[in-house]
Image 1: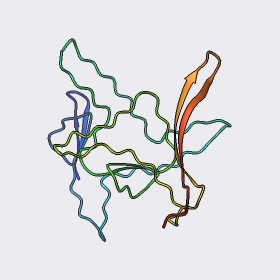
Image 2: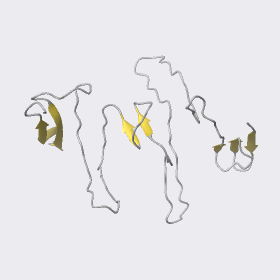
Image 3: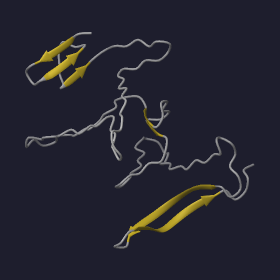
Image 4: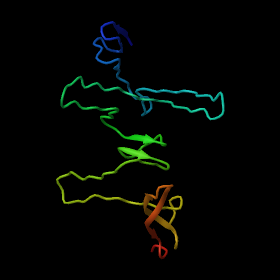
Length: 165
């Protein structure tokens, strides 16, 4: 695989003669035993002091519109495939295993040309066994700040009211 440095624009290319980004890596990979990895970053981050903070991948682009209009800013684009956080085998476009936290509004949109509406689901299993009478299925909570702290002011909860048939 060839390595090319382009002094105009301080660009580095690997596997390409035409360098079109700060770091431009282009390669074709044949799957070995049914699996292939395009890029692999394997790191060992070792603490040196209490309360050290580890960041394996940090993306911090600076966008300068240069007084141009209609400019779009994309910090990260995954053009195809599934993205997993907390899983090595994502099954959905975004598959998160573990607790999440979001600050700001969340929008759920179904813009397909069908009569289907949007779905927001809570799933509960007992390690993929049947739920039991009294199990919590999920909550939707509403919080507000009273000037001293953030407190839950209302919630809706769903519970199993009988063992499923």
